[in-house]
Image: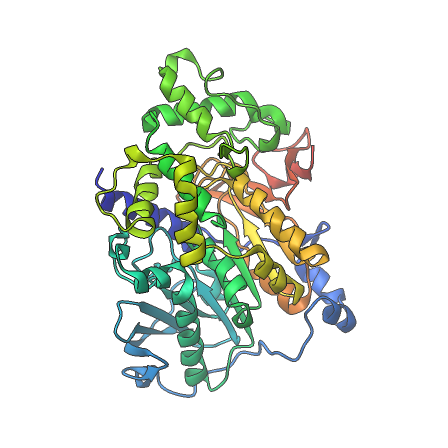
Length: 508
């Protein structure tokens, strides 16, 4: 496949995870619905938990016509279009505003609901960015009356080739475009409604998850809380793993699917039921060189390649630079993304040959570009400071992610928790079982974390177990508890195996 097709497929998957696949769900804390808990919370308790201040979510209306925003310049961004959009399904009527940062190809879109609850939500993109994410028909943010802002990461090229020898655009893609979009979105909201937002949130998956962590770490004054799905807090290690994979003898997609099926066959029952989902993933000991049936036809080098990717990547000195992948089907994007970052960001050499790649040799070179020069990744200390100010972080990562390792997310998040100390209570981590990259996989991949996050920030209602669903052709196939890590959904021994009520969040 050509790289353009590959990146399109990747971005579409991520957009599904960011926009389409987030559905309203029932928030439960200690087994009780949030709406019941909220009634009994006292004002003192709300204040102690960070809620209960004088910021309002009382609905307000616009103070000007949508079309009057056209042509205006706010900061360094010019509004290129502003037009009303009719209500559709659960999405209310809104004013759609598009703008471009002057002198760049940085496009930004702001959706201003007809009735505003004084909330601001910024949405991250995916892949190499290059386009404004498309909003699904059941978008939670707009349905909740929030202003929704999204941007293209500073450029219009989803292949990432525009980053080659282009430091200004690379810096935008790394993180600076986030703040530009934030400032513009809030300025448009203030002009349209005559007031500033009361609460501000950032959400995204994959590269958008990296953006969420950067929003908290680098631009924390702008946000009350963030949702980081399948984030990359360790892009240096990720690029090492992706690029190394481009040199391995990887199986075909068909064989990779058979390898994933073999992992399910071995580890499925560890959660108490054989349902096609490896829920107790942490207890799964799978070895592709031993546990894959002979009939799959894996060659020795192919089996070794899969095993190496499911094993921690270490430098010669023994230090881990990237944790191994889980049991989900490994992606075919490794080489494209690894080599793309190496050529266009790290080395600025379009002809660089990955055959020359060596993990130990290139680790400091990658780190110098990604961490030191461009600061792609969020600092654990800065994330800890964000939480020490009482602000909230939700991290989630599918256990079957075949593109980014959920184990590496957990490993690197431990450094944040250590830096935050007691303030780490202001974060929650969820590992949706059987879910691949941002969506897909056999597991329940449709859930809403935005409304629980809002309840946590605004009402002091701490999120607990959330109900996730698997929906195919608008029909719910199964539901599962989305458990707070380190617990996982364990079958109770009785009841419908496709119903979340038959599972309990357990550590063993």
